[in-house]
Length: 431
Picture 1 (cartoon, one colour):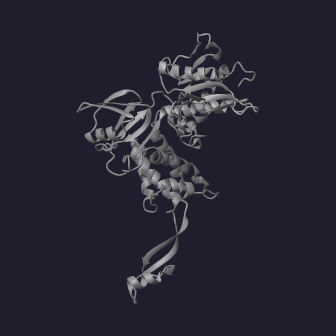
Picture 2 (cartoon, rainbow, N blue to C red; picture 1 turned 60 degrees about the vertical axis):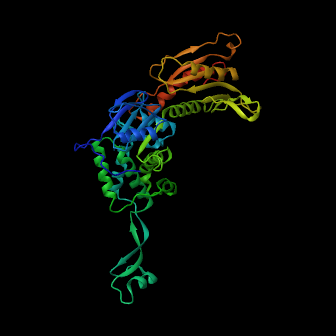
Picture 3 (cartoon, rainbow, N blue to C red; picture 1 turned 120 degrees about the vertical axis):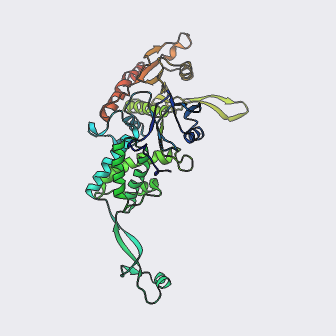
């Protein structure tokens, strides 16, 4: 991964950033190496029409930042205005402890995800520097002019002969160059090339310089994170390590490893993120009721005639079941899908997909879209054989930006509480 090189444009201290909105087209001027890189490494996410001097680019269902060979950054913002960091936290993509109980000024709305994470991380490591880095004893081997610790006899005789002027020593030395600090240094190195704000980048570079003389970056940071244990003496590292985990997992686990994509990037698949958020809201809302939620397990609709193992399964994003002790399989009460789309009404594809799920289970259904311009309404099936299954509800999830994480989560629940009750209004137990 490239973390060095010239990351400044001209001498103005401003990082060159190509800003695009998810799913929108934008005309840019990219270098030839950037064009080739996007076409070869990001063709599933980035649509690029190359006209020579200019390129028309659109990014489908992906948000975040993509580092380019030229040192510039492609920054992709969501097509729906939202608090992206909060959305990712509720989906479980980053640890929600990072954003819980933060004062309103700690997270600036509208800033890029990497700038937000970088700012939060900088705040924590500046606090650690003020408090003093954790240290531990480590075995050190070095050549000294005076005896220190134990003399390594065999090495001493091999290198210095019978009348030495220097000594090969092995000793215990208290040092900050330990895994917990090495992970932080690695995190600075990873996030720094993705920062687009000049002032924030300068402050991170200062923090990096303070680490550099005494702490080396971790070679295997995720493995090191798993092995780090916190105690009363170093619990003040907790927030910084949570942020390190959020940043490093995107670098190493989401198709951005050095072997495949050598330039630092941090991207998230928004349809999957939105699906995870909806599932979490539904599951939590049903907690304590006679119902439970399951995922993508409605049943099998068809099998290959020549191979019983070749099945076509029905996999709605969530299935609501009534918990019944006397039956092996809890009966299906409703089905639903989450769609990260901004159309005014559901597409035919969305409708037929949910209608198939409803017909299979003979239950009502719901399609959930982000709150933007989708019109909420109900669809009633006119065929008499289909009318018993109930309606198909078209509803929206409120993901509007908020100053704090807790109100953001509250509005998620508020926007789905009534729709879920409507789905289950034929039961004796409201939500």
